[in-house]
Amino acid sequence: NMVRGVNLVVMAGNAEAQLLLTENEHSLDVWSGNADVELVGGSSVTTKGTVLSGDSNLKSNNAEFEFVDERQFSLRLRGGTAQFNLSVKAGNLDFEADND
Image 1 (cartoon, rainbow, N blue to C red):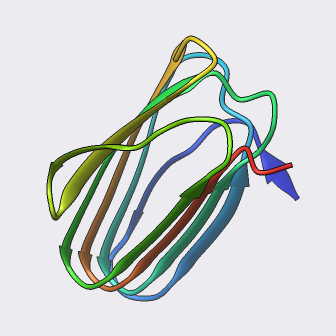
Image 2: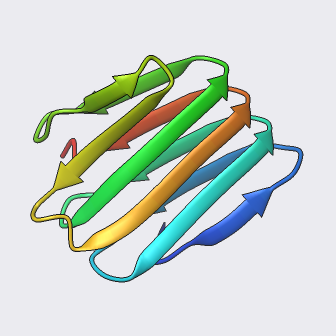
Image 3: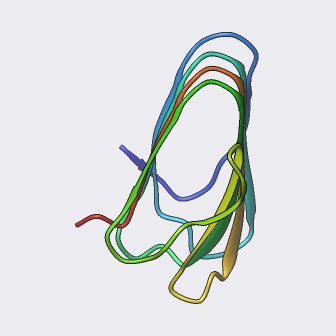
């Protein structure tokens, strides 16, 4: 099921989410585990992401990722009205944005 808002901390385990973010501030912090996140079509969001120890697989057909360094990225979709902070401390990130 699609979620329209999230403020979640996962201490151990995996997180999987399909998100439609259009307003407000949101966050997902995974301390030990993997994250699989999809921002679905219609999202208007600025995402800031960090993967400290692990691999990241980032996909978007409609926006370009900007990289601060090899561990930090940002992405802006459709004006970036909402704010989404995404962090994976020890694990892998699969992140897909608006790939209808």
